Image (cartoon, rainbow, N blue to C red; front, side):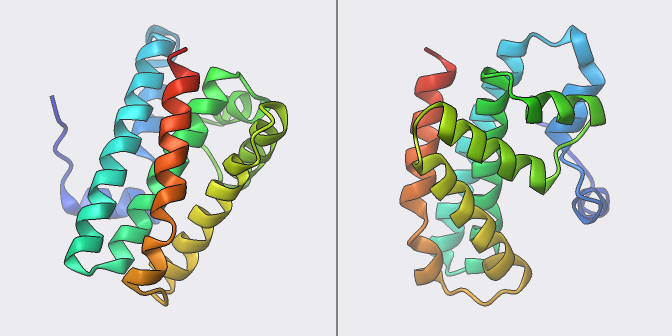
Length: 163
């Protein structure tokens, strides 16, 4: 079942930095099976990646940048939940993730899992969100360079989350 969110409401959520999936998971609290939350994040990351590729095919670097960022964001959240990082616990307490928590989680996960590509993927995602989405300075070719990092991270997360 897909949710329909009015466009104005979706824009307002985006403007305020509120992630709808985080909001739903937080609202369900202890009642949601953690595995269901993980599966939802991984599924959403895959959808964002597919949408990014569609936008790239259409020549829309701005929207592709945002979708690639969102895919990585969901991957980091899933890994942080899977490994119960302090950043995940803080986001759960606050009811939302902040950019600095995502960055710290990516760094911690890269260290603890001995996988520096996690930080690489996060750094690239944050870069394209700023310069590709907010500032609209990157071209389709610029953004395409980062697709492989996002694909790698999503595959890595699938292996780690569902092992």
